[in-house]
Image (cartoon, rainbow, N blue to C red; front, side, top):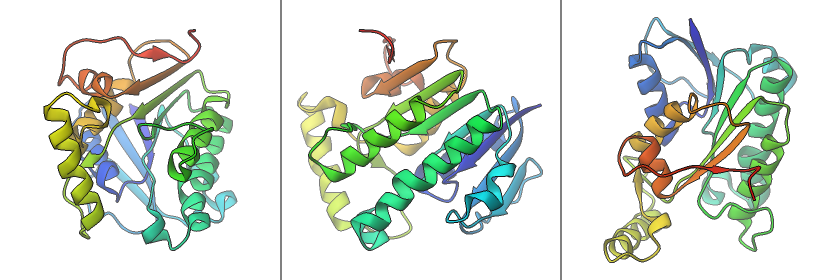
Length: 229
């Protein structure tokens, strides 16, 4: 029985991922560590509400064949840049550290296009720092997905994000900023599942068209091996 352990299961991409996991016969158990109930009832789902501020209380629950991290927030929702960092970096790194210590062999991380620890943009810098920190942990396999703008129904409207999606769609249609084109969250979810079993390479990063390809929505293209020049 293949077991997935997930954080971010109530979010836009995380909820799509959990739905995919529950429908996929290859996965026998889905462990979701959540801040609030998902509202999903399924015999394959084992849901535990946790306080991510106290990792010692939940780290022992992080066991399985693949760990998926889709947790994230915005500065507006978090209330400050420091509070956003707690969610986007600290909570996820604590989850990854627990997974590595507990012997989870594969870690699949949802990041963002432009992620770089040296970026001048705070959000991109946070994402890049997390990518690097997770990749440095002793997992046999790490997969990082860096999609463009996530496209899907949100519980609360975000006018600025909606405007960005409109602009990004227009630019993508004329072949500009293709890696930043909006990507449906179900495509990202499918790509994350595919990444969990995409071969033995220790580290891989997927961006732009590579994510569509991984999900089966594009032409074949090779992922970047983080250890390649």
